[in-house]
Figure 1: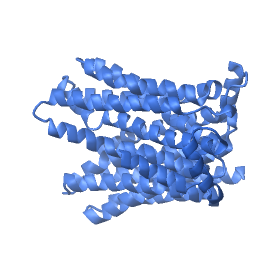
Figure 2: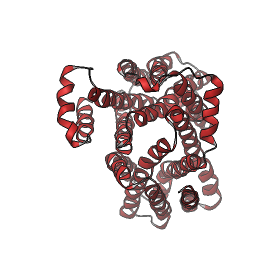
Figure 3: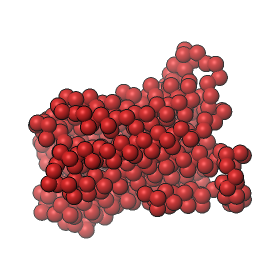
Length: 427
């Protein structure tokens, strides 16, 4: 984990604009005293917090959650219900969290989120019934629902000229947490396979330790003075929110990201089944999914930097089209190498698109409404990610897996064209 944090710190430090880089590195040795420290150290802390936060969130569900739920007597529908509870929380809680962060400040909301990260994992140790597990998942889902949009809002508040790049590094830190967690959780379950009940407890203890780290790191992140509530009343906060959701450019940008997450939900849910049906092994399926995540994590900061220099809208449209072609292209092949290529290409398309969408929404929104804007993005994203497997499942049941991938591609391509038309009108 230390090596990963060093990698993030090194990459973030290199991304600073040249003339300030040496001064920033020197200032790091003297504490929290000057402007350059406000641009670097809080950001590195936020990235480290994001890594531990998403590690803690992911290890609580992958791969332990379905096994734990089954051990409590849940049938497949019960497992599905428990798994969907936290995603539902993301849909309903992201927007209120964004509104509250605009009113109360980002740090207060990050601390509230980190408190859930630090406490929820230990509640799993008390669970003896499937409905208790669902309740804990509901509570635990609140943590990520708050943290992700507020973290993105905080990054966009701190940076302007290099906003896309910094958002890319923040996203990469969370992706690293998502990537490591299943490996760690699966390793614990494998080593302690002789005593499953004990292995579940160990996984959730590790989850809790990571959650406590999130809380400690969040306490150290300072609140920028420009983000404090300037005496606004609640009616002002809701007026700001209404202005956000009435901005068609913000809404269509969020819908494009929802569309690619709709496609991603289809990809991660049905690619394993499609590959098995095609005669591929579980090992090869793991390579498909891992290559997708690695491509996304490694390229996102650079795609964000590209959007800073060359504009957001062309990049969003291009990423959406590449994503549509790559997800639909999977349906044309049933052998290892072509599917691997399309998996990597789909990961690249997500990097191209998502590294520009959040930054574009931040560009479009005012500082006092940026939390609300990121909350809208987070909620719409979760809707897209949740509905993807549902709609694709209906299509797959009726026509087959190939049509599910093609359908996801059509949805993404249609949204891309709609985005291009509305973006042209805005320009």
